[in-house]
Image (cartoon, rainbow, N blue to C red; front, side):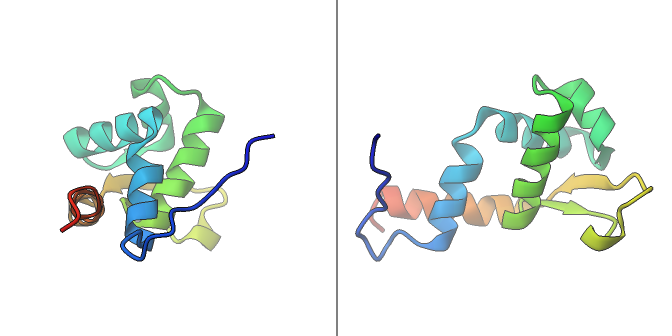
Length: 107
């Protein structure tokens, strides 16, 4: 079984880790692109617009929310029975991209 390793580099920050996890996944990029272009949307709207199924989109939305790349209009513990709307967070997206770029270019 392959061994998973982490870079031994102080420049590999949590933001770089989050950027790689976020932008290294096609479905997450599709979701961010859709939300950036279309504004707040329900999970159903997102599923209809991207090439991933509902369970996969649900998983990706959680991951994107955890890194701050998207925002949700209903708190995590209060979503049962509600239809939250998801929005892109362009400032956080830029922060993550900048962190990754600085890491790659060793700035």
